[in-house]
Length: 154
Image 1 (cartoon, rainbow, N blue to C red):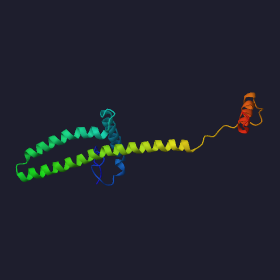
Image 2: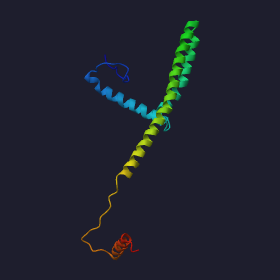
Image 3: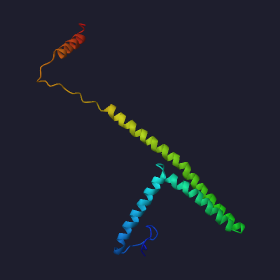
Image 4: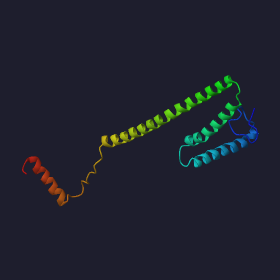
């Protein structure tokens, strides 16, 4: 059981003959091109939002057509129940999506706080002066002022 020529990956499961390995590469490239086209069509937004915006009207049109085909009340009831379950699943996804975004923002804030805490906790290395060089007049005066301050002469 293998992929037929020109088919997309995921349509059939099983081992592929070695001769069709070139088709796999073409399928992967075509899928990557499709995803890139979808992302560019999304206008920089979320790919999931783009797909959802496209699928919602398609789903409603297909459901309306299937509902019109159902003549018996039991068939209509089963179809409406399935649509209701689909709606609940979508609402759960809509509910969880903002929570995931909030969790990502919280994680990013914690990472920023951790970086700041590390910067504060690690003391900065002070540059030491070269002891072989003679002191300048400013350095001598600073040392004398510090000693006078410590001794209480100033």
